[in-house]
Length: 633
Image (cartoon, rainbow, N blue to C red; front, side, top):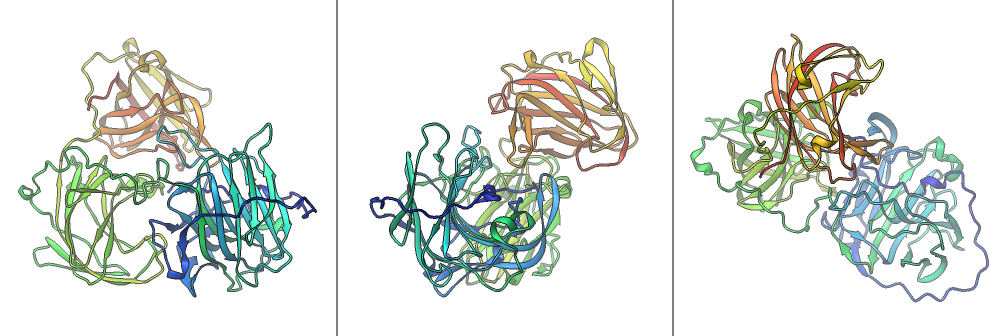
């Protein structure tokens, strides 16, 4: 999986900053806060359409914790965020990092901008911890045009070492350093109080128990928060880097940061591109997805096996199976079967699900690419869209999977469209549900598994034309030998050296790519061993990925005739495919020269030199058939 889906770390830049004491000032006359209730925790879990738990990633920096949904609980009329001593790993900057603790963070599904924000909460007095309420966004959120949001954030933070004080802060376009410590005159950890802020275009005023206590004005020069973000609450412990600010954490003591309700007067906004949560505008079925007559396609044998949480009982003819389970909560439990031979050459899968129980069932269906899974990609699924009984349902293109809800006794035909190589079929039944803390039990029948080349796919139609010439260059010490063919319409790339170097050969193509959006290349493996080739259509501008790295790749999607493990990484960049011994493939890449990466300038080809593979390689491939064209739907 990708390193992390990192939220702006509240108060991360506060480390080492001297704390400001509250000072005498002219009493503020701001009007009282107003707002509608976003979530009232007296009724328990408000549901994913309102709020969900961060689960499986870390903010890094001074945070010594991984967010997990298991650290959220609802009882006694409040949401409780806890810390657990548990060694857990998260991916940071492409590397696996181990943390000593897990803790809780809850986030609203929707985004909110200018307006009033208020929370009724009780922080802890545990030294080395922070209990928070804030609104923020960052470059992990993108507009529909693909433009990254700035890091804008407004904070209310309680340090456990000083429960009689509260820290106010804001970040604007990634710039912090606006900390202000306010002396409350009471111990906030002893009982619930109301805290909030008014976020206007030209000022921010913070409130305690309905009284305005601190105000900042928009500077004449410089940045000020202006971008809508999610409302967040979290409770976390720091590492050694944070001790100077928050004190040394001695370990979990059972205390929790508690929240009774949250309110805002800000308008509710749909999440930006990349976060397809419920209640967004209804997705449209994939063209052609409903044109397949599934009744004329034979059902395949099912080969799901029982697991720790699920008992699978196949029918005598293997065309259906009963799945029973109990004790399933928020972990990523699933049953799976190999579908590589069934899905080859197809782009649609259908199966029938029936809920035999008395409670609703949530099923997430993942069609998984084995290579992406082995590489621990953020999203190893190749799902592109889905329907349930002909109606479009949510498919998460960022984290993976299509979501289906089954009422008690309901039977549905579920169709998933996919692109590329689907090696595994995973069914996550009542698992991996954001914010769910109640153990689930159920009884489900799976049947009528079918595959088809249904409807339209993203395979571009490439106009016929003569291949163009490309001249490949290689930087010194990259390990390649380039032998150009006649008229530079082919080239043989020989590579000897250590992997993990990210060394490519490069061909300038600005004039050829201008006004086009498809690049096609034929690749021939001249060796008796498999080889992995990555092709980037490189733009003129490098854009931050939000994880301390950047990409200038404009690849959007790809198809390949032949090969295996096809994978286009739209976050870090590049399209990869593995060629068997002496195999020849034709790779077609759809790119977007209108993205933030700018106009296309080069074609980059990496031969067994990508990150994660540190072995020595002796590779030899021939590339030819270079065609730039326009995708025809």
